[in-house]
Image (cartoon, rainbow, N blue to C red; front, side):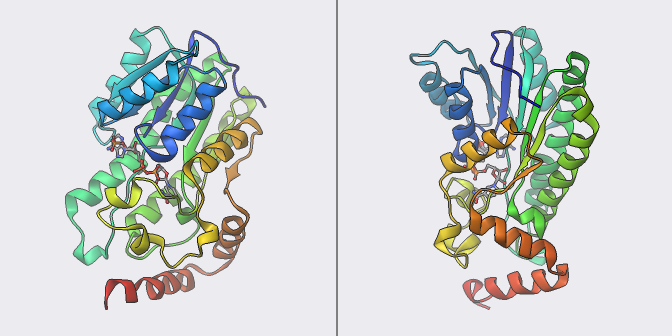
Length: 272
Ligand SMILES: NC(=O)c1ccc[n+]([C@@H]2O[C@H](COP(=O)([O-])OP(=O)(O)OC[C@H]3O[C@@H](n4cnc5c(N)ncnc54)[C@H](OP(=O)(O)O)[C@@H]3O)[C@@H](O)[C@H]2O)c1
């Protein structure tokens, strides 16, 4: 089931394109000749990427700054794309953020923003964009989940649960739209050095320092695996052999055991 070929009337809507994995997914799609709509909150970073992507290439790149935690801003993104006369051929739900710390020390607003960005925005964008893909029998959806989707994640409880949600959602969506020729892939990266830890108000060492270096991949490697997985119609892509083995082990281990292991691994680093 191929993804739609690049076409001047079509575009790839990439959320979280201002940084890390999303920026690399946008670069990988531009190299394949696709037009892009870049979405995130920081317009300067989106514009810098857009300038880079159009240089020397015949691709159309739109910059649409938006806070995807906000329902009205999400709706406006879709309206802007429609007003530009574009159809979304590839939807990349990549924007995401985490908090860090135990639930009893968490900030209510931060936790709710996480759920709105990592869960609600994925559901909302699919709900707004997939009907058009089905009507046209043309489209593809890539959603960035995480290896966190395969296990509970103490000190990132809402994040782990959010990624489990989007993995499940992606599987279900895939089963629904297969008959219309629309591939759906969940990209589940292990640790990647991006702006992610800083955005969570912590460090990569605290987030995933207990994981072996061999599990860490570069953002461009993860992006390439995600796009190739979508092109090959894979339901789930876990980049890196060690991450694939760890995900299989995590899925096969009872959730209370995995939760206890992660809690234990994170205790000394939190000085308790
Ligand atoms: N890094 C890892 O170890 C890792 C591992 C597994 C999965 N992931 C997932 O990979 C995806 C990309 O993360 P990354 O590692 O590339 O981190 P990143 O460099 O921090 O990128 C996150 C992107 O999401 C955007 N974003 C966050 N909140 C947003 C909001 N409310 N509205 C609009 N855009 C928002 C950010 O843009 P603005 O700040 O400009 O809005 C940024 O472009 C996320 O879904 C993350 O959960 C990351």
